[in-house]
Image: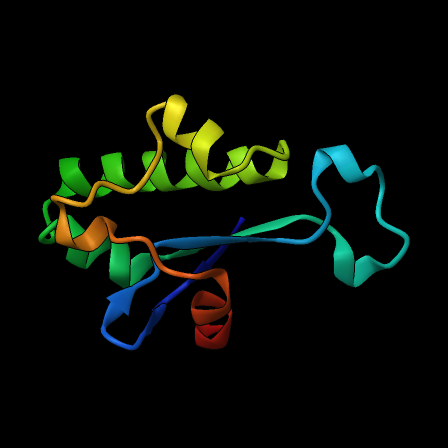
Amino acid sequence: MFPKPAGSGKGHACLGVFEGYTLMNGPPTQPDKLPRITLFWDALASAANYRRTLFLHEVEITYLHELGHYFGWNEDQIANAGLAFVPSAPHRQKVTVSTCLRAL
């Protein structure tokens, strides 16, 4: 896991992103393809209104969401596990991976 201070783009906050090979792809052939999860601490803290308990919950949910991608799950499978974005929560809007990667 790689913590980063910020991850926003086009008005939407990226809370986390998964990059690299999934478990289903087998071992990567290049070091830069190793699986990695990046969590954006500033965006997570903001999403939790800087409240410790909510922040820890956001970190847990976001990490598990990104870990689901490592397992090879698609967004529907992640949603079925209760780890999807929530349209009614402004900080949990769906953001494209490319938008989040540009924030790195």
